[in-house]
Every structure is written in C-alpha cells, then in structure tokens.
Image 1 (cartoon, rainbow, N blue to C red):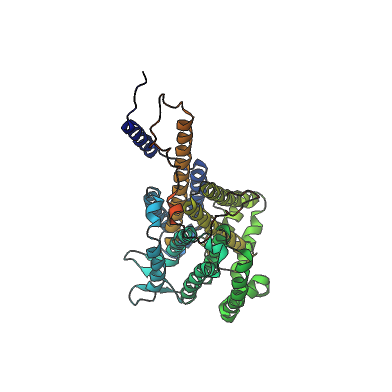
Image 2: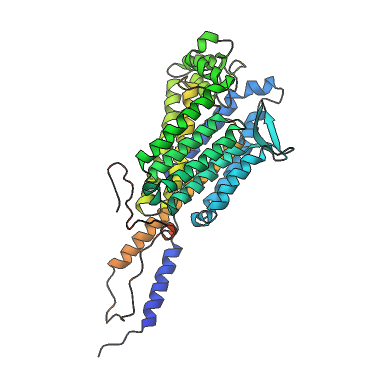
Length: 446
C-alpha cells in the first residue's frame, strides 16, 4: 500500500532549499584583488620616490607626501571595505537620492566658508582637516545612478529618444557645474563615461551620434575660448617652441621619459623630480616612473591598467549574461572611468594629449582622488562577489535538480522552485514585449 505524502513536507523542503541558497557565500575575484594591490603598492613606491625633493623644498619634511598618501590610502581602504560589505540591491534603492547628491556636492564648492579656491579653481570643500575635491565622489556616485537608470529603462534607451536623452541631459547639467569651477578634464571624463555606458547598456548608436555631433562644437568652443586652455593646446603641439614658458612642464616630462631609455636610471635616481618637473608626485608621476624604471616600468604600469580594465569588463559581461544588469553596468562604469582616466594621464605624460590635470588612479599622490578610487575598487569587488555567489547558487540549483525525485506521487499543488533572478529584472519598465540583449564580441543573450 502506497504511503501518502504530506504537502507540508514539500513546503518545508523548499524552505530548506532556499535557506541553503541564502547560506551560500561568494568570494572576491582574486585577479582583481591582485591587480589592485599591485597598482596601489607601485603607487606607494613612486610617491615615496618622487616627493622627497618636493617635501624638502616646501620645508614640510622628506616624507610628508608619503605619509599623507598612506593616510588617505588607509581611509580609502576602510571605505572600500564598507562598500564591499554592502548589498548592491541596497545601493540601487537610493538611486534618485544619489543623483541629487551629485548636484548637491557640485554646488557645495560655491558656498561661502565651505568652498575652497586653489589657483583660481573652486573645486574643493573644507572638511575640517583637509580639502576634498567633490568631483571625485561625483564620478563614483554618478556611475551608480546611471547603472540604475539603465536597468529601469534598458529597453527604452534603445527604442525611444526620451529615455536616451535623459542621462545625456543629466550629464550636461553636471558638466555645466564642473565648467563653472572650472574643471574641463573631469567634464570630458564624465561625458565619456556616459557615452560608453549608454553603448554598453544597449543604446541606439545612430541616435546617439546626433547629440554627440551637437555637443562637439560646444566642447571645442569651451576648449579654445579660455586663453589658458588654448595655451595648453598650442604648447602640446610643439612644447619646444616655448620651452621655458607654456611648454616647460611638458618638455621636462618628455626629457624624463627619454632619460629612462629601456631599463631606467634606477629607483630614486630621477633628476627631473628635483624641482625641475612641476607636479612630479601628482599629475606627472608617470614621467618620473618612466625615468626611473624605463620602458620596462612603463610596460608594467600600462599592462596592470589594461588587466584591471579588461577584468572589470569581463566581470560586467558575466553579470549581464546572468541577468544581473545593475551589477554589470556598475562594473562597466568603473572600468570606463579607470580606463579613460589612466589613458588620459599617461597620454599627457607622453605628450600625446594636452594637459588635463587628471591623476593616475592609485599611483599619483592625492587625497580625495585616492579615497574615491578605493571606493570604486570596493564597488567593483562587490560586483565580483555577488557574481560568484550567484554562480554558486545556480550550480546548487542545478545539482538539486539533477538529484533523484522522491518516491511516491507529487501533490498537485506543488510547483517547481522559481529560477533565481536578480532584483533588477523586477524593476524594468520597458514598453517592449521582449528584451534583446546587447551583443559583446558576437555573443548575444535572448
């Protein structure tokens, strides 16, 4: 005689299965961790080497800038750990507040008593112990907001003008506030990240060309109308024409790169950092690195940044393939930000681009830039953690599905467990019937 099965036993089995899935933990991507640690370690070494002479000239101590760099790196590490322990779905819930935070931060620099002006630029606010450059925080916050927007309107961005133009309009507003400071380099970086994320988020390329063509004359006008920006462009084209004037910084940077040759003059043996090359420990630290470590050191640094950006894009692609769109778009945004900023910084040091005032992430000495780059790395590592956890959960579900079914009849009310989905799927507001994923390298997902 067959034994009757209690339907409650299947409910308890499903509950136990859900509990087992919740207990599964992920791990942070070891490749990302290794690359980030390598870049940060190289940065500490180069800050120590490039800032000794500057500290002595300013009479603040040989290791003043190294101590300061290590302090901000420690604060950034604490912030990164906090981000790494925060669920992405928690961050995603506050996307609209994040956008308001971007605008509010950029307006704080104009508040009397709070905003600080350095060399005629209003880019900093006073936090009681140090100045803080607000645009560094805006970069990371804006990436999170744009990732959330692309999740909510990912189909509409490809199908309608309004959904595509909204983030471009937001970027234009932020750029206008940045140009009032003024900060041309960060403005162009923000526009570049916006365009890149829209493309990776499935934006219609032909539609996107029209706003780009419309904004191009404005960008050129902003670049050439300011006399100091025009001097940077002309000196970039031929720095030797006015070597002791507008081309002084770039010509000394090129001399430092040339002295390095293949293997460098040796760590700590740079001549250009001895008060010849301005900003040797910040904007032009790559030139000092090229002089001391040579072509081999240049290849090492470029290789590390290529590996970091490539791994971040790979993690983002895997997230999109698993329908974890918010996590994937966050990874894409961080990859674009780090990739563009490092490309511009290296290009400026090699004389390939006009001076922009952008630091080399995690390598240049800095305060707010170091801290917020650490936050961006923490966000990227959190994405890799949740990706690994999701992969483990799917593997567990497949293992349970492959297990033998229990003997006896299954109650008619029992339903198979629902597939694991990301929280972002429930937030889509598309008016289309079916989502067609953007393809990456010939691969597509239905």
